[in-house]
Amino acid sequence: MLNTHKKINIFLILIFFMSVFFVSNTASALTTNIYIQPDESAGYSIPTVDSFGVADVFTIGHTGGWTGNLNNGFSLVLSSNEPDGTDVTVGFESCCLEIGGYFVSTNTVHVTSKAIYTFTFSGRTDIDNPYSWNAHLYRTNNNNDLTIYGKAFDIPEVMQYPAYYLNTNPSDTSLITTLIPVEGSNVNAYFTVSGVYNNDGTYETINFELFNDTDTSQPAVIVKCIDAQVGVNLPFRCSYMGLINNSYHITPYLQNDAYSYPFGALVGAIPQVNFSTNSITTTPPIDVVSCGSLDVGCYVVEGIKFLFLPDIIQVSRFTNLIDSVKNKPPIGYITGTISALGSISSTATPTLAFANFAPLNSLIFTPLKQGITWVLWLAFLFVLFKKFSNFQL
Amino acid sequence: MITNFILTLIFGLVYAITIPIVNLNDVVMSDSFATSITTANGYISSLNTFIPVDTIIQILGVFLVIEGAVLTYKLIMWVIKRIPTQS
Image (cartoon, rainbow over all chains, first blue to last red; front, side, top):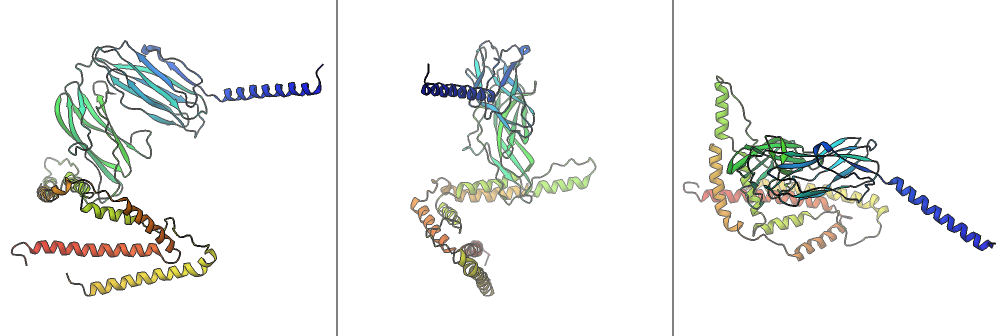
């Protein structure tokens, strides 16, 4: 016979195990699933997983077998069962090709309202070098199920090994140059990028994607910069007018024109270039106008524009020069002093903590400060008047 | 074209003047300078209880801008007067 004390102990142990069982079941029920479903038609096997939760990393990979001169990649189509208004971040935190090549980019998208997004990664192989690659998929929350369909693709029949590079050394001012807002309008701006491009291969286009930093889910603008088949040290320069005034970063990629696939990448990552929203004094770029064959007036106007309107690049050289000089001695000391003095404000943390003047503020100090403010401005205007009334240059 | 040419000439002149400066190292302000500004900032902020610090800073800024403009004008006129036939 069990005495009362033992009965209570057994009862407590039962309660404990029941609690553990309940909690574990509850945790299991909260685990969300991501299903990676292979597209068998593409010929690549992608493992199916479930129970893909936060902080789990799932590696999608391919090892060996791809030989020859191929541009290839991998795309994932993602559909979400999230309820409306819920954001889910799923992305690739890293990816690489272990031998040769690299992926164009990594993506993180916010899935909202059952949207469907497509990730596309692509790389290129070295000739006859089989390689393996992998991408690490992750998610940052754990609400509902996600379904991801994978599909690999190839871009075969590249005629020649594409060799290309884009010198992106930011210290080389002859290359990636400026992102300049246009004066006279605080809503329109443009960017110009220039550099030298080497390509001894196929038809390719350098594209620049400008991502609006307030919405990084998709490029705000895709600028097609150069379209060439063969070129060694081929200079390029491209611009885009009409950017909305904002902060951007710019990412380049190559596109195989024959197959419309982004592929490969530009050697060396272009650093993020912040689009300055500070206005500068410059002239709006000249619009390209197509004059009619008999429109003499149009030709005259365009001729005058050509003769007298300055190129925006010419003006930007001055601003670049200012940037390169402003931190050099002796100007740098003035710049530093102005910058330091600019930080002085009344909102800094007071060194001297006065007692609580709240009752006195409304009665004495606030009206006093208002009065002093008026006196100061009037005194300033008086000094200004006296100065200019006797002003001699 | 014409404006570009003039701007190129001006830029070349300015660039030639700034070449010795551009090749210098960037100025690194002393830490003690930043500390002094921060310290002064704290005391100035304390005074804001009694006097309108923001107004004083604004007036000082406008005053410095005016004085700077006058000084720049005088410098330019001084250079112009060095040109022969200009009095």
